[in-house]
Amino acid sequence: MIAFFPEPYPDELAYSLFARYHVHSGHLTFRATAEDLFQNKDAIPNPEFFAPLSEEVCNILTRNSTMETFIAEHTMLPYYIRFLPLERRRKAMNLLLAMDRTFYDAIYVRQKKSERRQYMRYCPLCATADREQHGETYWHRKHQLPGVEICLEHRCRLENSSNGITVESQRFKLVHAELVIPQYTPVNLNVSDLEHQLSDYVMQVFSADMDFDNDVSTGKFLQSRLEKTPYTSLRGEQVFARKLFAALSEHYQEMPQNTLEAWWYVQKVFCSQNFHTFDVCMIAMFLGIPACDLLNMRLPELTLQQRFDNQLRLLRSQGMTQKQAAEAMGVSIHAIKGVEQKRYRTA
Image 1 (cartoon, rainbow, N blue to C red):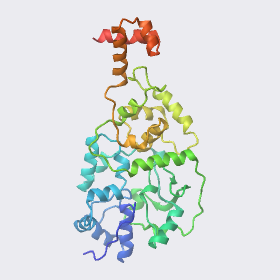
Image 2 (cartoon, helix red, strand yellow; image 1 turned 30 degrees about the horizontal axis):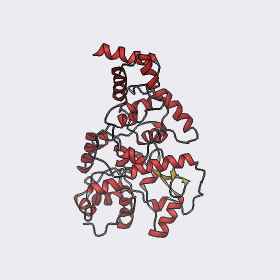
Image 3 (cartoon, helix red, strand yellow; image 1 turned 180 degrees about the vertical axis):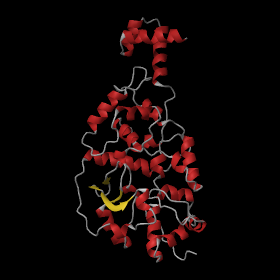
Image 4 (spheres, rainbow, N blue to C red; image 1 turned 120 degrees about the horizontal axis):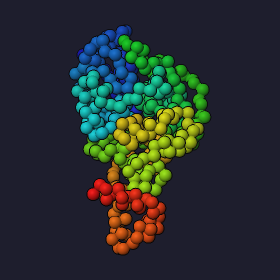
């Protein structure tokens, strides 16, 4: 029976909470702690989520809240499911609630070697503040976001700890941050305004409540915001992914971390095949979409194609020639001819 269990700190990873329990419980071995925490004493701790928990630990964690809230506030789930299709979002949450190990197949984790972190990270100034306030530091979720390399609060670069995050490095251990984060680490303040702005954008998206009702496709939403940009065709039916990728690469060229390494990563976002939060945020911020709009995606009543065709149809019904309609709409006569020929062929 567990006599004492620590309260989670703000933004603390579940892994960190369990590591603090391991240290403060007085257990000499990981296995003794695992017998308290997990359904399987041979469980391998997951730094971003958690292994199936014992009934007693579940009861403790839900004394003053719900397991849904604990998952939302103390795991990385919001980052990995934010832009998934609605049913897949729900499935991921339900599987994690059920302690079903297959939940990992439902989330979206890109397995690019260049993006794989090997160690858990920390902010030296946050660690100092934690020790002053709590008497110990801990593993913060906000320091583990893929793509985000800085601490927003202190505008400094994050540092790698000695605590690895691979399955092999986590086998049979829970590492308390207080034991591996040095008392003093030089602070690197080399952070550009653009990197700080993008990191803040990603953090706003990550920190928001998870949405299990909105079924708007991320790709369709972003495509709807390409109107009056050079990155979409006249009627909005095509996305010029190569051109947009070139513009993104130039805009973010000073960034030390650019997850959009090729134009097809951009294309896959619009085709609803790439749900990587950092990728989506890079595109959205570049297009001037406020984070609040990205979090509450809404599509216009009519698509750009429908509005273009309706306007053309109205002008032609008023007796305008193709040339006059083209001048009124600010497009070439070849565009008008192409639209009408295509429309008539498919009518």
